[in-house]
Image (cartoon, rainbow, N blue to C red; front, side, top):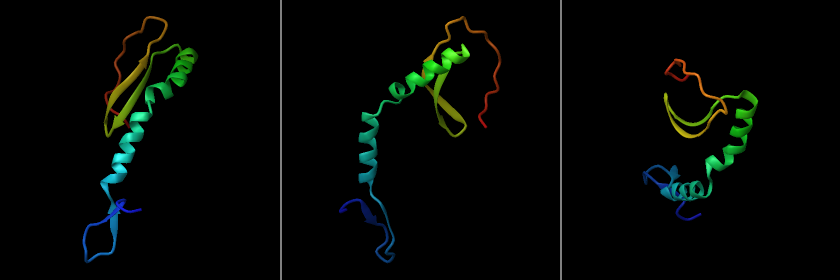
Amino acid sequence: MSGWIRTVDPQNPRGELSTRILAMALRSFREFDLQDFAAPAMAELRERTGETVYLVSLDGNSGLVVDRVDAARRPCLRRVQDHVR
């Protein structure tokens, strides 16, 4: 397990994960396509509801639209609260 845990303070035997774990996580994200994974569920939800379906990545109180499946019908516009609970 060499390189996975690093010592921050030589006086304290407690360690922390090194950046090696971050590098491994980033490699796995390149191999995993969230849009491909979510597409069947988004299509089914659109068919069941008749509404446009959004795939959103949340970050605190804000979000980034990653993908969208449009409704078959023309959307109606309405005001939506601009906050996330």
